[in-house]
Length: 147
View (tube, rainbow, N blue to C red):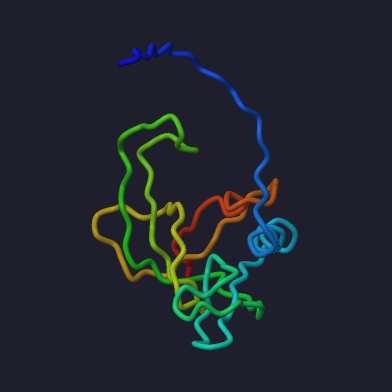
């Protein structure tokens, strides 16, 4: 039997990622217009956020763009306390499941301004970044709606 030797090394491979037609429009609308866009399935009529090219329920191509939110309802959340090198912010922070107005699916994003002691079913609104770059982080976080 042949013997193999493993030599541990680290290599860096540069690459570019293309978000695709649907995600690119979603990110462009966040960056340029502070609008959160979803797509409506032509068959089941569900509004999908974040938008997807194909409806996961009906397998139909989605091409009907609709604005959702910007506010929505906090359905659930978790408090992240353990640090990991890939997190974009330092713990502790809260990640929530948000049902935006007009959407039939949920968005997962950072939430600030809640205590993290069981608050759910509260209205949230987005806080957009000052310098937007065309990514999901163009929404810095969601916070409780005032008034």
